[in-house]
Length: 128
Image 1 (spheres, rainbow, N blue to C red):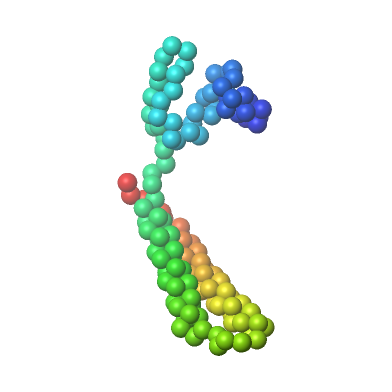
Image 2: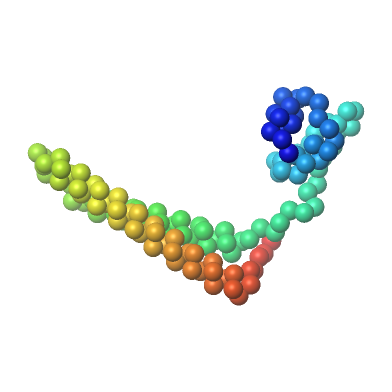
């Protein structure tokens, strides 16, 4: 689909039925619309099943990442720099904190990727 056609549709201009068919499938929040004198309410028959296990795995990874960030920040705050500390030392401590956060996130990301690969090999399980 050309961007020009989508832009025309967004502005309320005239588009072909073929263009409308192509676009309507990508509007999952569309509740109803009027076509000429007919009000229509789409029912999406081919929505993919929601992958709950993947969702929960991603939420668990997010939780663990945020726990790691919280721990690193708490550690940094519990050991505040003394007044008059050299700005270079403060910069180094802050950089170290950021590095620890990124390392923790990378570790969790690698673990999650390994879990997904293992799950993919064993077959995906989905639930609705």
